[in-house]
Image 1 (cartoon, one colour):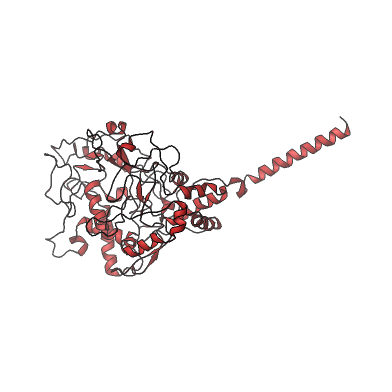
Image 2: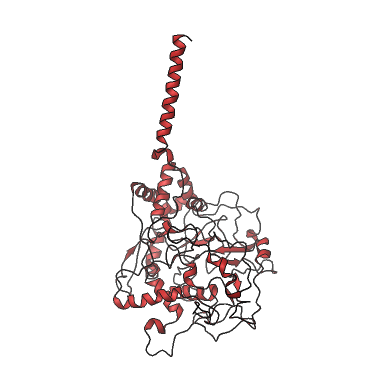
Length: 483
């Protein structure tokens, strides 16, 4: 080999070695590993679940037993050891509020195996046969999946008729404390085949007393702000309202409930089957399956020496626990999360996920005129075909949902109303509907996979997100996981 060829060969070898060395070193370089990836649920202690820090001793003394009531496990008549509550069934999705509202602590969202705080399988799986019950586990309830409720879009056997109601996963048939009940489970396999079933997962309850204490005028002014910027992005929004007094309703996936008491009463009746003073009539009250006088949960009128909490009904205690619970505490901030917060606002996410609101006058100590950070405007927005569930609730149509509050999202396991993903990046992308998905703006559209529409108010924002450099997208994900 000539000296010239040897020199060239040596240079090539040296160059290749230098490139290889650079790549080896840069495997650990931040720029090289920057990819759009959900960091996953934030580890460490749960940043939520305690009472609001300014409460006085009397309020704290009501809060603490209210937590215990929220954790109480129900059986049919209260006769099963370890299940002292009564009123379960005839149909139910859970036997305790805390069973479903568990992540990262009592009052949160669905538990799951990926929890850094308390990894447990979906409790609805074991619930199917608890105490001798003869239920089968529906295909959409899995050990690694979220706690879910199921709603039917249309009325089975009545084409075009809207249903929208919850159809409980299980019945008390076969239980040792429900002898004689023969109520059958809904035929979920048949309704799934007919594309007639949608799902909902539990919403976190932290900090909602501040939301309840926020005046309608504050919410209206917040929604009206930055109208020109919102219009450029295709964002409008509206509020769900009470059919009785016309005021803003704000709790639930479609903001269908007016108050935390109503939220608790409906859930107790629908999810556990317990008739109460707000919903006094038993659901699925077929002969042989009713074992208690109604309402099953009521004010203790005979109590003379008990505390206020002991004399109050379960739903009052549930509402007090939720109302007095502090907002989630965010994690520590880094340069990445700080840049993510700035990008979150710059691309338009904050137009709906409002970073701050302020309460009005509250009767609870230290909760008046408090500025808090829910990252929600509590308004309804059209989310288009990709997220539409075909359900009407109050003024909310099939593709309209309340802006989900993002405080505490860093420790949640499942996202979107149906828990379809555990990946925050996928949840972000699902906000846009321009991809050939069904429009689902009414019952007929929901059944027609050929229907397509671009109606999501988030399309402009998601376009902005997708236009960001990968590093900035990652910063937004890191910011969200810090909340």
